[in-house]
Image 1 (cartoon, rainbow, N blue to C red):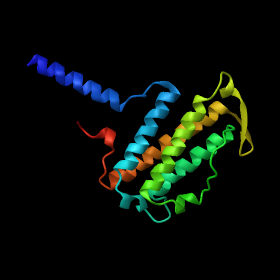
Image 2 (cartoon, rainbow, N blue to C red; image 1 turned 60 degrees about the vertical axis):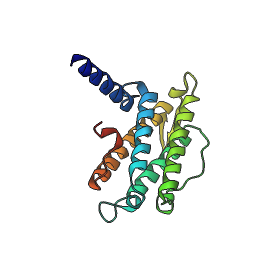
Image 3 (tube, rainbow, N blue to C red; image 1 turned 30 degrees about the vertical axis):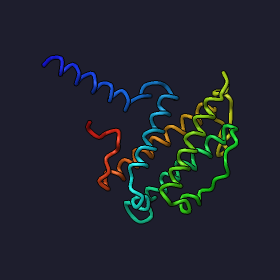
Image 4 (tube, one colour; image 1 turned 90 degrees about the horizontal axis):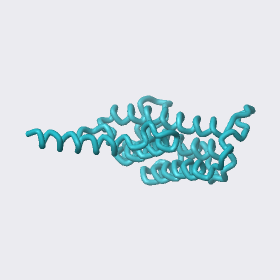
Length: 171
């Protein structure tokens, strides 16, 4: 019996580790975690729920994902990275699940790639946004906080539609 219990504990710990890989591992680990969770949640959401919104005048599920993608491209461009031209109108015009997930993945990869190219000292370099001078480090912090904020919103949307986030399903 104790061997079975030990096996259960080891398997549970391995699963938990896989779900939380990146947690408490600095910016890059946390970025990897939020990126995986955003993609997993988007993929777990049925296509017809991308147009769902909790109330009139509030972003739909798909619009929230596109808002994240557009913001990721814009905010990383402030650090000096050339990114594709995006427009806030894309929140309303890019609506299919496949296209939304493609834009989301591209934006998440763009942030990860840009951060990976930074050299020592780059994080303290000054950039300007909305008339304010901030550091590149501050821009990356804003990007991850923004993505986490909207991940929470999307989890609420999902649960309101009976969708369980893949990483919180019992094994």
